[in-house]
Image (tube, rainbow, N blue to C red; front, side, top):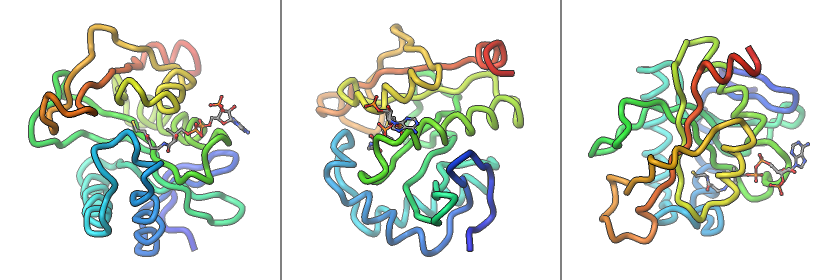
Length: 190
Ligand SMILES: CC(C)(COP(=O)(O)OP(=O)(O)OC[C@H]1O[C@@H](n2cnc3c(N)ncnc32)[C@H](O)[C@@H]1OP(=O)(O)O)[C@@H](O)C(=O)NCCC(=O)NCCS
């Protein structure tokens, strides 16, 4: 039984977190290949904390990085969603709403991340009226940058930054920034 469904696409349900998501989510976040562009793989406790933060954000903001489920089979694929960043130190472009994605390996190469992300962009711009959505990652994360481009986001070349949660000399501190303005989305799809 899926939980509350936020959005639907041709192949996917984007829905509320449920207790049974924690197990496959923690397995995904413990996979070094999935986490290769992050500072570390997540322990079970850290994965649980992340799910709790997502649930809190859903309550406060009405959106979060939300589970992605295959419509036909109910398989849990990972998360895609919108989030208001809440790092200990502010991002240089705060306040902002980011879009992000993390899927288990077996779900890569099927267009699922872009399909889910487009639904979240539509929600962000058309349902809750955001002016802009940003995305960021480390320069080496080519698959994630391809999703950003595929869904119409553009690199802000002036926007490169060091992630405020990491020491400046950390190998994954340098980030690139992509932006999409509501006006560009609406001109194209609205
Ligand atoms: C980032 C991530 C979600 C990208 O996944 P992805 O599968 O490459 O991206 P999509 O789901 O949009 O799929 C696009 C690919 O599916 C292919 N594809 C296959 N069938 C498709 C279909 N029916 N429809 C659309 N695309 C399809 C596309 O051609 C494309 O392949 P290409 O990149 O080789 O050109 C994934 O690599 C991931 O989870 N990485 C680990 C976590 C991470 O780094 N997250 C980002 C942090 S910023």
